[in-house]
Amino acid sequence: MASESNADDVMSMRRLQLRRVLRSLDEVKGVGTSLISLMIPPSGSLQRVLTKLHDELALSEQIQSRV
Image 1 (tube, rainbow, N blue to C red):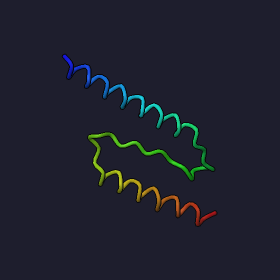
Image 2: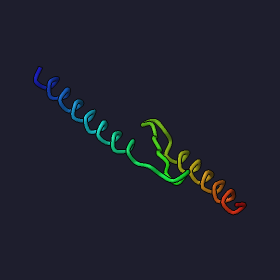
Image 3: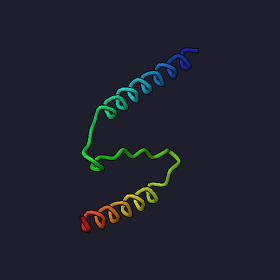
Image 4: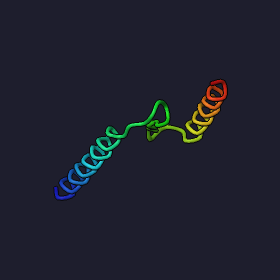
């Protein structure tokens, strides 16, 4: 019984911390597309995400060089 209460307390603390982080991220402003938020699900492949980020960076550099 006590371990369930302790686990609930830990989850409540984690939720509170997540809310605080999300609130602080919501207040951040960037100029144009200079700021991105990247959320990777726990089951996501880090290598796949890195590949996509690399591709996006290459594409954005091509766009900037045309301007």
